[in-house]
Image (cartoon, rainbow, N blue to C red):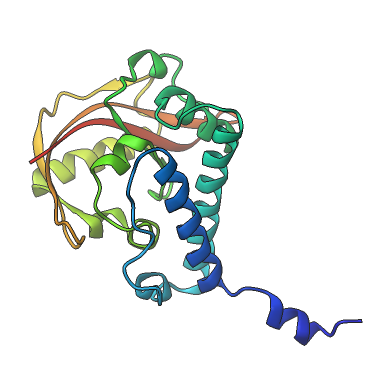
Length: 221
């Protein structure tokens, strides 16, 4: 019988698992015509700075996204089919959006799904088309460390997020904040954008709010 110590040695550690998942997702996105780097440094400095619980969350979130993409390809539909791709992701987590959300989703929209704790767990392909962060950075750094915008806009969006989580917004919200500048804070490309939030809604599981999503139009500068 193999010893427990021997079995442990053959079990990939968190860093190796995360590296492999990043590489596999980069290949999946490449099939969709996108060039997304898995990481800048194979030593994964950003992932390594996380505590053990954060590493587990990053691993599970990345694994979920990869499997959603792989299942979509197995069903022979493109990840560029945003409504179908988003719906597949929500079904995986048992999350239900407002009944009219998909009526308002447009092909050019960037879609982001957040948990009730504010963790971003899903991005559609439009997000990856304009983003210059690596997969390691996206899954290891909080969103407020990735992007900058005017403080007043950040406050407004944070307030809306709280309203969504606390159930103070029924149905699908149509933003009236208008366009604003957004910029990458620490990516390789340091890309800048003009973005316009379009719609948002709470996400429910068994009747309880468990997250929220945003749609945004994005133009690169």
